[in-house]
Length: 334
Picture 1 (cartoon, rainbow, N blue to C red):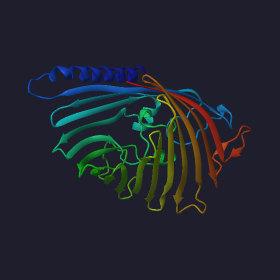
Picture 2: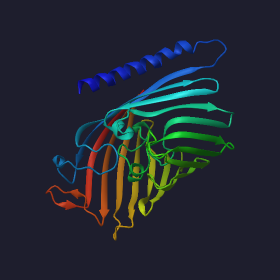
Picture 3: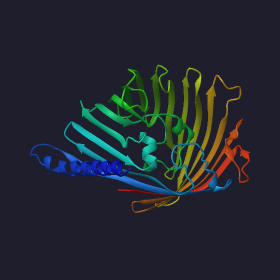
């Protein structure tokens, strides 16, 4: 174990040395180059309201699956931007980072080329274009994650091309390994596409049954007023009769410059040719968000209720179709 830890620390030190050595190169005259370092750390406390904390259960969605005090992740994002090219290195550690990367610790690692003002090519590992929620807790209003996010892809390795067709219309096309695969050991590939119109996105993913199969996903949102936002995510996925579908709504209200409330209401159903009754879940998550400088505190209450399934245990240790919890997360961004 010590050898593994030593290797990880050496990797971190080497990464930091590279990140902070690059500015010296960036001082070349006549070239516009810029380096930046950002990141976040997060942790949380969770206690179940409908069950004992010592039963070892969780909602089943990604991240925030422990009771008591627990860690999220620490990530460091280094970016280097030149006139037409650049690189991004996003390194993640901790339970959330391990789950997101399969223990690979590299959340994103890619280079890009601005072919023109309207066309950009990107090669490497990048986070998925599908879905409303993201891996980093700084990008989500709710601290826990949805069933739609947990069931879809996290990241892709491949080549994508982004086109700004107009001020409000964009198109992305991608040729990649199958989802969440860093090394292509099978010779299988996937295709991706995204059409964006005025902040609304229609996403497509396809592999020939090798991983996810086919997924179509809509992600968008609307400003109902200066203080009220309404987000939407809907998806359908099928892989030879196995898959899922669902919809999640995200109404959010800003009550002051530092505090807001957000509700996630989600309906999610599993699809299988092998099941007579396909189980579905209805989830409600109410989250507060209080910001002080770079620190954000997120108190949260969550209730999931399943139909045709009893995957949880109640406080007496009996099978139950419901699970509820109170969570408070702390996220620091820099």
